[in-house]
Amino acid sequence: MTSLSLKVDPAQDRPWDNKLNRDLKTLGMFIEVYCKGQHPDAEKREISAQMATGQKATPRPLTLCPDCEKLLMHAFVKRTHCPMNPKPQCKHCPNHCYAPKYRAQIREVMKYSGMKLLTRGRLDYLVHLLF
Image (cartoon, rainbow, N blue to C red; front, side):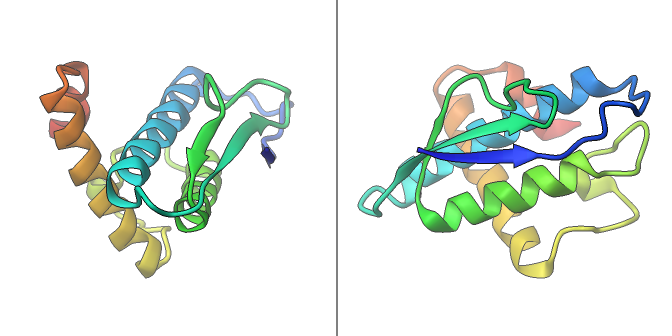
């Protein structure tokens, strides 16, 4: 199992840490759903994401192919270091910090996984898709 460690300065006063944790868990889940559906035959491995504080970034290890693992790492780093407070959804943000390749990939992931989760009855993610 590969371990991904995210560096966040614990000395910073970050009142939006709960939102950060929720966003990281959502990103991990969306990327895993996408990987499972779009790359079923790709070789995968478990990824365990952990904050520098020791807190898990995802509730359980994620099973991802190498391409989705790279996207996950890029997304986690960008979200963790986002200077916006409060953070808007990336599609509404005036500063696009994702590299163009990853930006196109994350859009595809959000579209695919959002629809997949909605058809599975995860209506709580409808709010995430719409707002």
